[in-house]
Length: 248
Image 1 (tube, rainbow, N blue to C red):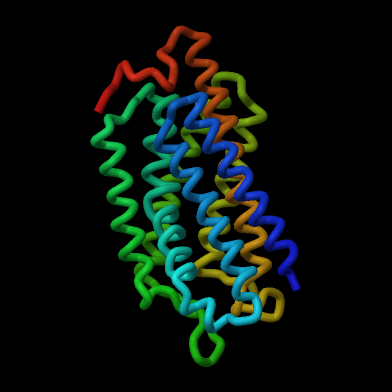
Image 2: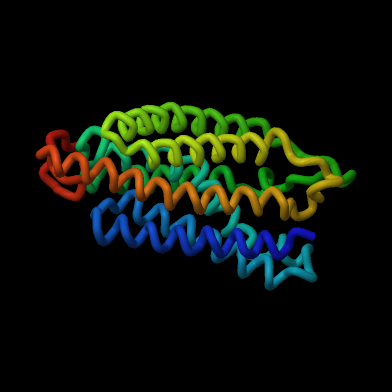
């Protein structure tokens, strides 16, 4: 029923992720955010190809390598990518902090480890034999806690934007951040009614989620740029400078 809207939302996220990721890499030299944005876009691409490839073969889809890869990328970003990695990446403009190569590699290694652990087969099932929603309490609680901790930093980020006069992007950043937290809650704890959004594919939920994640990546790029421009205008070190006042 919502298959077309899901595909459109996924395409939106893919475009936003690759475009914003490239901007982070090329114009800001922020490799943490640039690579993570591209990883999210790659996740969306894999998800799109998987959905089209196995549209008429759900059992084959769940047994495929693409399905396992999708869970890994999802766990990678939900655990560390759009949490710790996001915070450290944004600190380039909030605290003029440039992580060392060792720190950056360490964060990615942690994300890979978290992704592998949280994408284990025992955590993949979201519907039981009776068609009831399955809650994996450990991973779900972890995802929610790190999301809320990240939201706390993002609220500080919004305040910084507001204080420098970037009020529109501050409001947009607040909106997408709160929406992303709502998605996180819905993802694991409060699924939409089965009569509205069948649990077999959750196409309506993913339509909202993919749209929010795409807008989130785009908005954070504009927010980063606004604070970076302010830092440069006031004589602060540019976000891409390797000679930061604070260095890991």
